[in-house]
Length: 247
Ligand code: APR
Image 1 (cartoon, helix red, strand yellow):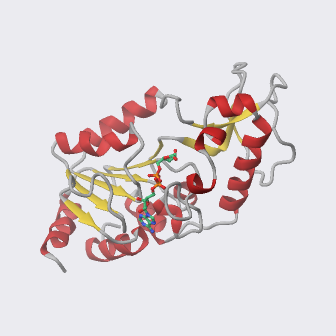
Image 2 (cartoon, rainbow, N blue to C red; image 1 turned 135 degrees about the vertical axis):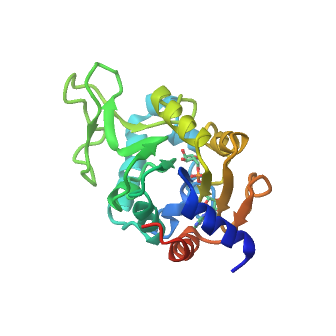
């Protein structure tokens, strides 16, 4: 095994704090399309027509038809080996998982301490912000589109952070604090193009973390990290876990 991967194995063994930031690539082996890959959602659809507050205001039914299709796709999928390793590692104190994924597959794999940076496709909230607390709804397909707020009867929206919307300040604070305190920061299955999520690795590196990228494709951070691992997450994490025995 290359010395730098051996180095990573010993760092993972001895680390007090480990942070993993995940993106759509981690769910790719579960059959969930990524956003910018060859089969990517943004190759087939225009993000501005489906994942912005303006798009929702313009045609909430169209937006909900698309989310209903994604929910049905995700409901039929299973967590893969990458989710399983990260779920196992999350049992260890000092491990934090920050995910950009809204699919809930990390949670379904049994991962503890998940920071949902972009929200959840299974959470709904009142689009009119009538004061009703957000609620979970796992029905797929949904009975009615668009679904309604049980409190005010208005339209409900997905509990997802859309383009042009801010990250929940508490979520941003927790993710930034975890990144700053990381001994090892793993960026897994993300194109590192969407900020502020893509800024977390740089924040961790500035604060002394050993940074790693796991991605079969090159990204803007492949030259920035201490160790780029050009492999699918489901393979690389399996290999690392076998070496580290963190569980
Ligand atoms: N293992 C690891 N990485 C993979 C795999 C795999 N099996 N398959 C693909 N990848 C990589 C691709 O090379 C690509 O760099 O995963 C990355 C997926 O990138 P994107 O599709 O851009 O997804 P992501 O980075 O999660 O997008 C960020 O953008 O569309 C918004 O809000 C949405 O959370 C999303 C954000």
